[in-house]
Image (cartoon, rainbow, N blue to C red; front, top):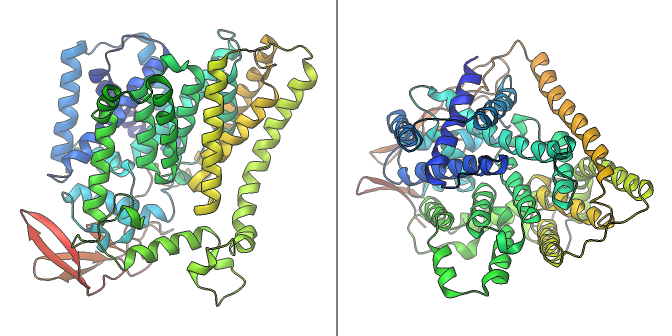
Length: 554
């Protein structure tokens, strides 16, 4: 029961925070969703900003949440209307279902998600933290949202809620879009069909809390962005809104950096790069969130985007100039199937060049992608085929604005797929590009039959199918794991719940870290800073103005 209560309180708090900063008084669903989204991104900004100066401990976190509630009460008298209450209760129930009897993401949660949350719960920003653990350079904003949710009321269990909360609201967003057609309150259109296709994918693939990791939220943001742009004429598109969605997608998943093509293109179309508009966006909240994130990255790793060498400042004392090129090559090689290579004498760098990797990548990675994409595409093909043979009439749409937006989104997703394939072709890095491209290409084939009212029947059938599928998967999980703890275990992945001892290792006289080198060799949520890998002797320790600096000594 505490999972449900804490889920409700977390979702209400995100909504309260968004309500403080959003002046739009509309009560429709999409406005409520955007208020929640602004709340999430604002709390992410607050937690990131505060960690520059203080640990995100329970006292600080509780004070932040109390301040948000007080500000909301002053502004709104703490009044919720019926739509808002239903909106929050329904999404909170989904949050509860996602969390209960779930595992954390394996093995990344134990390797660096949870250790980094512990790190920022116990320490203000540690400069050069990647010299303790290179994966600390790959964290997402979700780790900060999780860390600030550890307060006096929720305690450490609170860190498990934000991920499920955000995913549940995206569920709600796409379900609601389809529901409006299901109830015949709105007619099918391009945006609604896109939501239907994404809902089918979500119901099929994004249903297990343990598989979300740092990936799901970024990809769902990309789907949300595409959906929003399809709904609105270019003149009506809120540039700050699409920039905020793009920034949040990027700081969850840097591979989605190409998402900025969309707001940049729409800005050019609307304003022709008018200097005044550029200035306004440059100092907008989304831009400030992005700047703060990049500064954090530089302080933690020496790189604005780790480990992209072009973004690294090699003159900084904590920049590991030897590690960065190796990690870039290693990451590329492993994503292209390095363990499955035939020529065992080839170097990682040579393996990643000139498509030498395709044969090895095809053995496992391609099969994995096809096992997901083929069933998904088959369902979409069936829908498209049914529409083409069922309806002979066509509704010609001469909306030039829609065609322009559609072309922009199609081009962006195509560039994303090509970049994904050439750079890091592991499915979880770029599946939103692939799913979006498939969905948009298939929508082209029925573009003149989309607005036919009889298509409502398809929405009704698929809504029921997706709803039953999502609920069935959660019920199955609960049934199978009813003997386990209801909360995700953040302390160990051992089947017997054994927590392995971490060894304390000193660097210099005043700094130490914990080494997880026994049992599963995972830090999980434990005393920090913790790493699964011994630190090389070249790491130095400095204390400057109360800031810990871990230097790299050549």
